[in-house]
Image 1 (tube, rainbow, N blue to C red):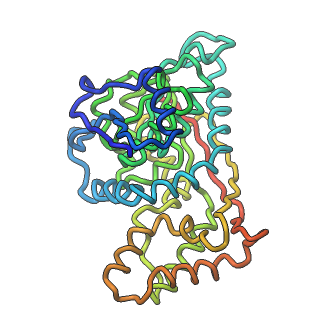
Image 2: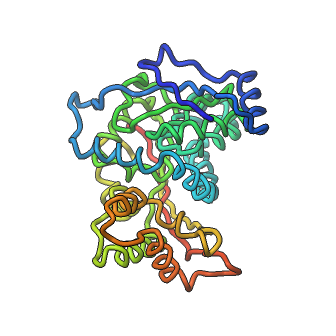
Image 3: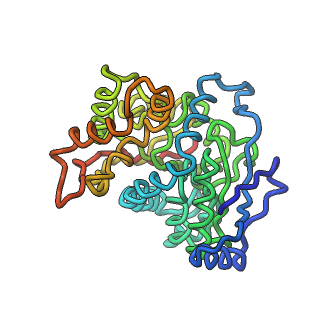
Length: 348
C-alpha cells in the first residue's frame, strides 16, 4: 500500500535519502503489507506569473487529467508509458547536441558537469526523470505530475532504482510552479505532457520563470497517433454517434503553429526540432482494449454507471477488437507507428 502525504509548502518537504530508498525498494520487492509513506509537495492556488487565476476550464482540465490517471488506470498507463523509452533517449541526445558547450557556460567536454537541477513535468510514473538522473550524475532531478497516484508510482520506481538520493517525486500542476524559485532550473523536460493544459501560454510562462537564463526546455508532442483513431471508432460504436473531443487529447499540439507561437511569445528560442516514431504494443488481443481506451476511461465509467448504453464494457471490448483487427501479430495488438515531434528551446 502506498500513501501519498501532501505538505503545504516546500520547507516541510522531505526526500527519500539513500538508506530509506533502499529500504523502500526492498519492501516493494518483498510485497510486504507495510504502509509506505511517500513524501510529496502539493502546489497551492493555481496562480501564474501573470498574477491571475487561470480560466476555470484549465483547472477543470487539470483535475480531469488527475482523475483519469489515478488508481488502476495509473498502472495500465505505466505499461503504456514504458514504451516511450526511445523518445526519452532521443530527447537527451538532442539536449546534449544543443548544449555541447555546457548549459549557458563556457565550452566543456562534460555537459554533465554543468547540469545541476532538472525539473521533469508530467513525469507520470517517473520517466524520463530517472533516465536523466542516470545519464547526468551530478544533477538533482525532480519528477512531478498532477496525479498523486502517478507520483506514488514514480517514488517507488525511483527507490527501486537506487536513485532516491538525487530524484525527488512531487505533485505539481504545470500551470502553477510558484513553489519553485525563479531562475533556479537548468533543464525542464515535458514528455508528451503539454497537451494536458487548456492554458499553454500560462504553462510555458511558468516554465520560463523557473529556468535559469539560457536554461533549456525539451518537450515532445504527438504528430500522428493511429491509436486515437481506434479509440474514437470504439467510442462511436458505444455511443451510436461520433463522440466529442476527449478531455485529454494527445493530438492537441499536432498542428505545429499551436506550439511554436506560444513558445515564441513566452520568451523561448527554438534550437532543435526533430521527429521520431514509436511502435506501440497494446498487449494480448483479449485485453488490448484496456490500454487502447485509457484517454476515455472516465467517460466509459460514466456511461456504465448511467446504465443507458447496455453492457458498456462488453461493447467496448467488441468495438475495439473490430477497430484493431488488422493490427494483430502473433495474438498481440501492435499498432502502426505513431510519430512525434521533439523540440529543444532556450530561455531568452
